[in-house]
Image 1: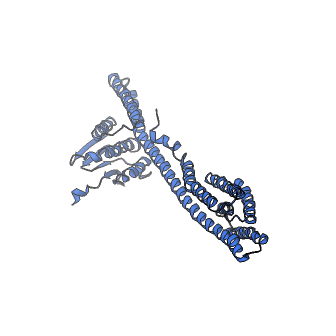
Image 2: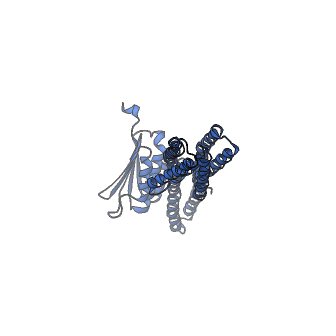
Image 3: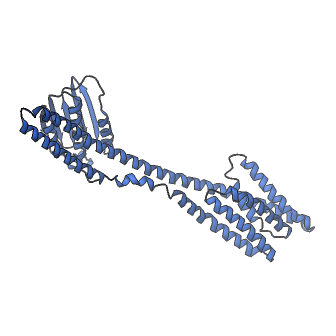
Length: 379
């Protein structure tokens, strides 16, 4: 027997979540870094040495960004921090004002994920960038104030700005990851719900059938010596019932099974009469087609419970347009008021806006299900 298609879906959900997030991160981080890095290169590089310095810093920054999108950046970011620091020192000593770009990018990736002391790390990195940039003033003795502003203050501020942007970017991607995880959990929950529904339907079919088979086989055994023809008839019915159950189980596996209330009603009458229980059916009106299938499930579950748990002599089934009520005598005074099968049905009916009520009084057990009237009918 094949498992319903939705039951296999759990192996598909979640597998591409991390890859989708990685692609999104790559698209939103790497191209802007390349554009800004190349723009600085064209605008500020005044010699081939400046080109080499900035390209090395940009490559280190891009390597860190690429590994960050994969969630494995620390082993790349730490050596990249050293490389870009050397690049910025070389740039400061050769008047390359844009060489700090790689160091500011790598630093901005390292600080936000820290579990604590992020402000201290941010201040230390800003001081490092300022200190390395201040070496420019050591090799030039003109315009000291301007050089300190250009090579120390501006790069430090740029690093603070890029780190603040990374804080916001990381929060954004965290929200996207939470959303993807939430969608994955919802898909898994849907699979679980479908499995529970499938298990409930399988219980309805096979649990009911097995109990009926047990009753009919016991009856055939009693009739075997004194009424062999009737015993053979009971065994033929058992054979037919098992065949029908196999068909229903296949239909359930392929999501093609629908209960027919009329057929369930006729089946319930036959079962009760075979067990020596008098059954009376009262139809107050024709049952609405929209409620027929679920009401058929209620009747089937209740019939099984009566045959299994009660010593009933009489059963009364009342049908209304959008409801059903089954009352039986012979209910035991002890034991749970609501059996597990009815609890599952209550939940299933609630999902369709219907209510299931059970009550026990004076040896009588009442099971009733009702759908609310359509809005048009209540106006």
